[in-house]
Image (cartoon, rainbow, N blue to C red; front, side, top):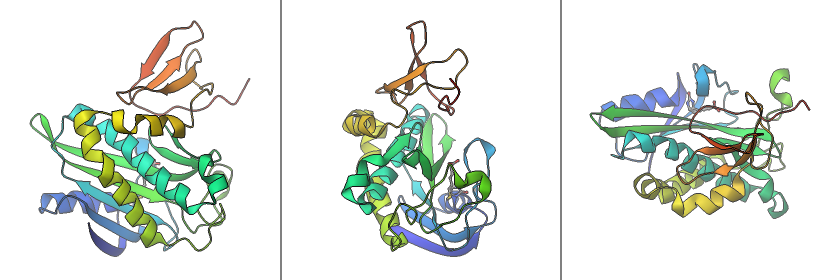
Length: 243
Ligand code: BTN
């Protein structure tokens, strides 16, 4: 793993995409103390106070089928989950979950987000950029986030070492990702099931439905009120809060 450290950039995903074009190697990492145009999924912004959190992107040079790219997000979510869980007291580790497809939550509050962007050449993937933001040291969130976001510090580890966390996440990702994109989710499926935040929860979907786990292809299984099992392959789902 080679780590390129930046004080400020637009987005570490931009750095990784540029690096990919310039020939950077598999598992090169770009990390920054702050981003001026940090991006989240679904066109949202990702903002983070300078120097408090972990903002980084990993370049993966994996020539897999484009259809396998969504599995990378699941592997990355689990990689972050496991690394964050190790920082918390053992009694809290089970509170760290992956919310399909790739948010990481602690007791229902978001601690990390992941943005996967890929480049396709012909019928194969040329490279994949996995952008990861983990709230590490932030103790005070803006009003609109305060009830839905948390950080490693707020969960009780005020002395968390951002470098060690970054390395643990990249090691976890490297351990599983190539196997999963070539052979499928089998190797990590049981771990994913244990970490699945949505499982058993009623979802805020047209016509309702209850999450019933993640299938071997990485799709969210949803049982509709009429008993039919449907599978959601992309997007985002919310838990139903109203009765
Ligand atoms: C989300 O939850 O919507 C995904 C957030 C991803 C944020 C990270 S921070 C590092 C990398 N650079 C970006 O611009 N985005 C990702």
